[in-house]
Image (cartoon, rainbow, N blue to C red):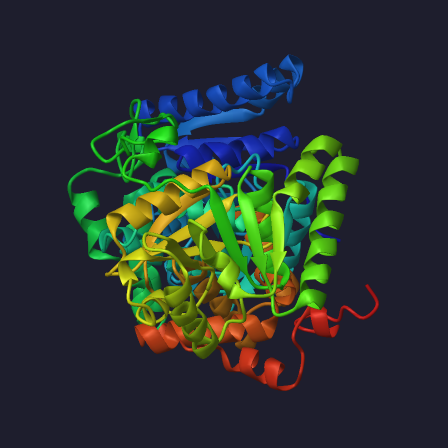
Length: 596
């Protein structure tokens, strides 16, 4: 039988600590809430009151339940008030010496059988535990912010944590309605170890002026379905907190350069730009603590129709290719009112593309998203061809053929001869250098990347990839076309992976390395990222959907270009691909899909 926790102490009543107090009190547990001073105690009380009042206003908590919740909380100054609790959870700032001092004092104050827990997100639980005479009763209980809402708890055992203590805490998490993943004491645990490498990489993109903050955040929200962009998330976490976590992970985690905090983070912390809590970080906020972003000197001044400034007029569009991406792009342009010339390698291919587009449009009619008249008008705008010569009078060509550089270069050389001057030539490549394609023509200033995401009719994002030879007029035209299609165009440089893949696939690769090291299971890692970070899919679910062969190819390209050791493809990923385990399409990847 798991032990019954009737009273719990929480040390530190900042946002995290107050949230943990609320979680316990909501579930009928008496809480002793402790701070260092009367002023800090009142701030903690106000934080709890504000959270529960919002829950009442939203209809998620009855007034009587709120009042009962507050009645279970005993606010006290000083650790001596914790002498009779069954469990203490420490939630003070991420400073090892501070936590060690608190645990040494808790060891003196608390009854011998009390469990001592830390909510640290990155520090060594083992190093904290040795400040006590009862390291076997010390454990990590890592809640995620906001604690009342987020379902995940990482239960972190050290090499000496008692098995009974682990079992008791796991049962407590279940009582609290949380999903726990139990792991050993390693830098960053699961969620932060995977999350912060990605966040740090996003900051390096911004620092290097590879893309704007708005475009980086929009790319990851719209391209991956993430609840927040990485820079907005850094502001929410707090840049000082992010710096401490990254620095700790770098020092404790084998000095992986990907966890070495980007210099800009330290500079911003020194300048007091801490994110939402200070009113300014990567973005500027209405006031300290406010979630509302307000314009500042970096806010784009041109939006909507104004994007067309300097853009060329586009009326007729050519699409070359017959695969899934090509058919989706044809549909997108035709629905948006453009005249489209579809060029494939023969009448049979054209007939197949026609049927695919027609079927997709019919589905739109059935679902009430498209009228029959609009469907017929869209189909009427498409001209079918098996020769590139029919692209002689188009204003824009979008290439969507196989991802082989030699094929694309030969195609662009032909387009260079056929197309009229001033035509924008776009490639939908997701991994090849756009400049290599552009230099196959005599007009590299007119060549740009337009990376649509699959399925093109649904996904709202397009990466507009400009090379060092792409003209400003061509980029403006590409952005205006994206806006006319109802898509969000994000502009970036011609670098492997562009924005989305460059940030996404190293994170997926890190997850594979974590599994390979037997640190956790695929299920627990997926749970951690979905429940702890709000991701729509866990990394192994996503890898199986994307295809392990595709993922490996992209990761190899990133590694070859950046030469960063941390980007080297995980051997387990390579082995699975060699074995033919490619994900859903082959019936097996990280999971068996044959019976699903």
